[in-house]
Every structure is written in structure tokens, then in C-alpha cells.
Image 1 (spheres, rainbow, N blue to C red):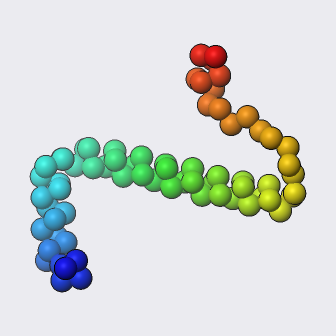
Image 2 (cartoon, helix red, strand yellow; image 1 turned 180 degrees about the horizontal axis):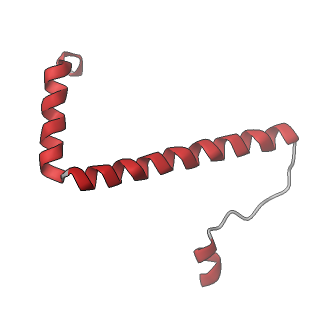
Image 3 (cartoon, rainbow, N blue to C red; image 1 turned 90 degrees about the vertical axis):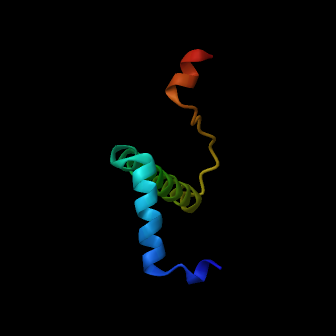
Length: 70
């Protein structure tokens, strides 16, 4: 079913989404997606680095605002 969409169908979907949500909302959403991808890649590279180093020391990764509440 999804393999029959094609370019005209994708363009129609993009136009409908743009009309429903507006350019500003979509650009801010894509910015957040980009930040999430960057944070994920950073976490993966840090995890790989820790595995290569063989460190077994635990780290506190609680965000600062959570630490302040406790």
C-alpha cells in the first residue's frame, strides 16, 4: 500500500501538513528533531568510548533541574 504513494502523493502530504501546522511550527519541530539526533549520536559515541575504555565506574546523569528538586 505505501509503496504506491510516489512523488505526487508525497508532495500532496507535505502541502497538507504545511497548511495544517504552518511553517513556524514545522521549522521549530525539525529543530528539536535535529537536537535530539545530535544528542543521541553524542550519547552513542560516549557509550562506545566507555566500553572501549573498560571503565565500570557509575556516573550520575540526572539533569541539573532534577538534582535541585531533590
